[in-house]
Image (cartoon, rainbow, N blue to C red; front, side):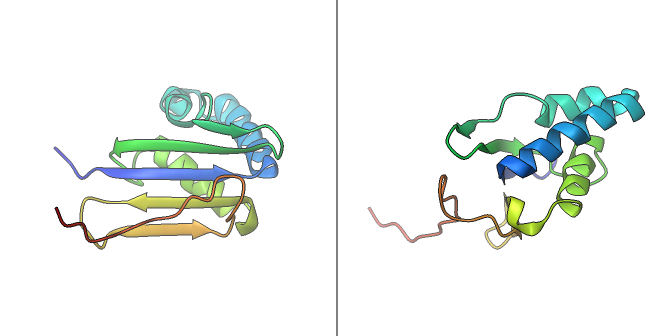
Length: 120
């Protein structure tokens, strides 16, 4: 079992370049943990905006615990990025469990959290 979250990480072109650098450093300096890091964030982003170079990574149903090496890697990446180069959104299972970081907003992706009341 565990507590699962849906997570989005949007990066500007600069943010993506810094991710690539961080991945290369992790592979060199942390080879034992690199497989988990690469599996989470080392692949192709879910969406790429060719015009701006911005990208989005999406994870659904992920155990987003800081003690996992790959999650700690993402946290450290965000700690070292300028706020305007990323937007991080994590929605947990509890209704009011929403975490956001960074200030990259608007185009090209316009990602946001939406809560609404629906009636059928």
